[in-house]
Amino acid sequence: MKSLNFAWHVALATADAIVLALFVAPELITSATTTQLGLYRALGAAVLPIVVLLLMNVMSSNFKAMLVYWKPYGWLPGCEAFTKYGPADHRVDMVQLKKNVGMWADEAKEQNSKWYKLYKQVETIPEVAYAQKDFLMYRDMAVLSLPLIAIAPLGLYIANASTRALWIGAAMFVVQYLLTAISARNEGERFVCNVLAVHSAKKVTTSKAPVAAKASSGGSAAA
Image (cartoon, rainbow, N blue to C red):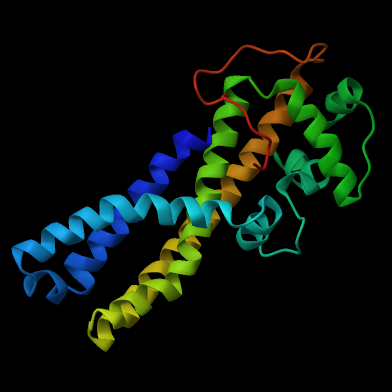
């Protein structure tokens, strides 16, 4: 699952670099020689995947969730599975869910623990596996975008770009961070509710479910 999302993360970083070079600071391209352009292309192909990989793995899952949800360290979407997300989703019959899975506590940590156990029982069902994949993808895109709010202007400054380019570069990544963080929140809610919807529709008696194509290659709910 991580390898599938990694390709999207590198694609996002590449698109960001192209936008910065062509639209934000075009003087870096127009004033460059053919040799320099070739060097930029080679460095981008070699360096961008490494930068993305380092940024994705230097932070813990809990810290990534904090950057997306703007809530205390250790908060995950499953922390409000039964008190907020489940009751708000028309697909989830909370009465039937309680009959199928038993009681749950209102405390955030206990809710997340209960939800995670339910998730592990249905993690390979396609609608659950794909929702998890999308949540992790957008979450890591947001995490990737946040440090670039500072890194991009710094890089432009070192490259002698204009002051206007520095501000535009920072603003671009602020917008990108907000969009990807909101998308991650929405996908996190869908992920949580998909698990609850499956359990409210039927009582799951085995830990194995139909295997989802590719997306269910492994990992935890907040890997």
